[in-house]
Image (cartoon, rainbow, N blue to C red; front, side, top):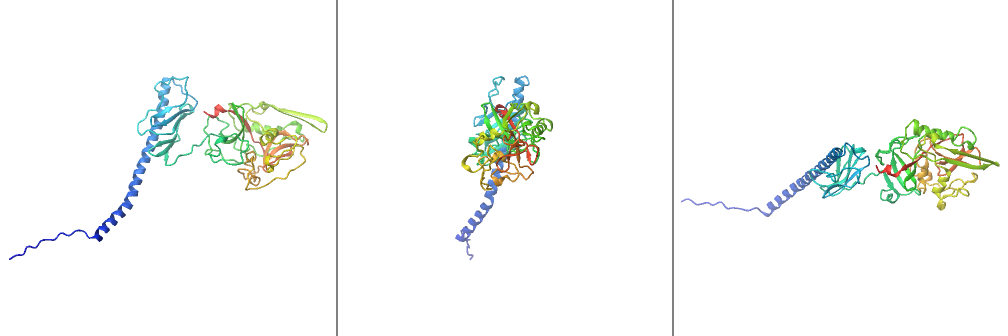
Length: 419
């Protein structure tokens, strides 16, 4: 008689279940981040592709615009603000036919924020902080890239009220704006990232940093943050009543011969110095037409106005920390010299040799201790005023080059900075 053996079904034991769960957890720990990275990479690639698509649509916009406007396109910057409804034109173009040209037309994901700009007469397209798929995307005219964090724009003009937000703190008393500008081409898009390197002789072309200290409502008057010449004498005689002839010739050469500075720069006015020395009346007038008509020297009177000093009485800066030589040319004041403390007016002697010991923002290891002003020292016929690396308005012999160079002052129509 045969016995009927039946197979008994068994389930997993608790230990076996736990082992399976652990194995699955390990697989998840390995696989999930990789999957998330793949998804994130795909979203980022899609955002970059969308950014390129938007840039191409801006190129097409230029073509369509020119077809409607007999080949013309504005020289000014044409700006589009982007939202979930698309990228809409913000620039007023009253002299052109913009029917059906009020926004960019493109395929793909629409950005929920950011800007697109067309510059250089339609030849350059850029995009800033386009919000796509959770990324902030940019396009520089050649390539696109996206980041997870907001990318702070690089500005051409930074107003004083925005200094703190841009991380510009201390040493800028009297500065109304920081401007990045190429004096040979005012249309060039300059910012802190494309500045020319500073040497003992310049630069005097390419993107440079400027400090605007006057604003008449239409124009900025501003001084470069560095010299554009090597050391030169004020003049080649021993008499300051002849004026800064040698320094002015160096200025002319740097702005009209070595380089051709932009004709859009506002022509400087004349400067007249008049004073009495040794019972004799002296005077000279600088007509900058004779020296290229592009740039000029700063005057001692302007330095006094900037710093709040009284040129007739005492060349002291406010708060008693940083001092200038007094107006008579005889008395030196004690100056607090500290590499850990910035001068309120550090920008006036930035990029001079070893100037951080006196509180400048940035120094240069070049033979360059300061720059000449256009003003004579009324107390000494052989001396003229210069701004030096110790933060002084110093007087020195006009016929000795020592280590002083030329630092240009220019005037620019503010509308030229918005192109």
